Image (tube, rainbow, N blue to C red; front, side, top):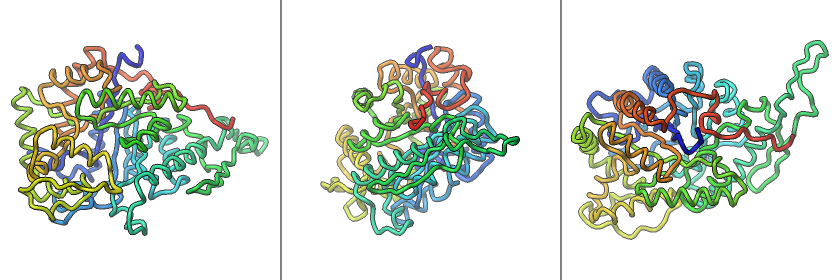
Length: 441
C-alpha cells in the first residue's frame, strides 16, 4: 500500500489522559499516572492493535496555576518519561516509544545520549518530542526568573536539534569493529568530532554511544506559531497539530507540506498528525453523555485555572461573569491563546465563566460517537488531506483506551485504512520514514 492509503495512529498520554477530569470518571484508575502495571497493560494493548507509537508528554514543573486549581490536577505527579519508556521497551517488541525532551532546560549532549540509548534498548523504536517549554514555573526550577522570549526559544531549539542530530552522526554505522584478535574496538576513521560552536551551544563531541539503530530517533514537534511551524517543517518527522476545524486542519496540512518542500525535504517525510480526543459509546447518546459527564466533573477552580494557563494570564483577577478582556501576548504558548479566542468567538461564549467551562477540561479536536461514527470521521478527515493520521487521546484509563482499541480499530482495519499487522520493526518503518544518511560519512 502507498503511504496515503493507510493512516498512522499514535497514542497520547499526558501522563495518561488529556481531559482535566478524566481521572475522576467512574471506573477510571485515578492513580494511572504512576501505576506501572496500568501503563504496561496500556502499552501491550496498543501494540496488539498495531499502533505506531505510544507518545508520553511531560512537564518540568507543576502547572502554573493557583493551588485551589492545582490540587485538582492529575498532572501533579508522573514518571519521568525516558525512564518509563526504557522500562516499557523491555515489555513490548514493536510499538514505538516517544518521549518529550525540552530544548530550553536540558543540554544537547544529554538529549542525544538518552534518546540514542532508548533507541538501542528498544531496537529502533525511539522518538523525541521536541518542546521549548512554555511554563514559567519550569524556568524557576532551573535557576531562571522568567521564560526566554517565544522566538528566542525557537531559535535556541533549532540550534539544539542541529547539535543533537550531529551527535547522533558521530559514528559511522560500522565504526565499532570489536576485533578481539587485533585488539581494536573501533575504527578511528569512522568517528566524527562535532566541534560545534554556535550562538547558544559549544559542544565538542563525539557522542559516547554508537549511532542509533534508526540513524536518528523519530523527531516529533508541535509548534503552531510561525517560529514553531518553521522548526517543524525543517526538522520534524511527525508534526503534532491541534486544529479543531476541517478547513483549518487542511490549511495547516498544506502549509507544513509546502514549508517542508521549501526546506529541501520530501513532504512525504513530514507526517502531520492530528491530536484527537475520542469518546466512544454503544450509541451516540451514550457517548455524548460520557463527554458531558467529564465536563461536569471539572471543578470551577480547575476550569478557571486551566483557562489561565491557556491564556497565560491569571483570570481570577477578573469578574467570572464579565467578558474576556483584551489580553496582551505573553512568552507562553501563542497558539494555545489563539485557540481559546477562536473557540470563544466561534461558539459565541461571552463570559469568562462560560469560556472556562468550555476549555477547562479539553478544548482541542474531538470525535464523540459510536465506533462506526468515530471510524467514519477518521476516514473522512484522512481522505480529505487534513492529516496523515491521528494522535489519539483517551478520555480515561483503562476503559476509554479499551473502547477505541476494541471497537474502532477493527473497523479501520476492515476498511483497509489502518494496518492489521506490523510490517517493519522500527518506528521509522511503521511511519514510512526513511533512515537518515549520516551527514559526515
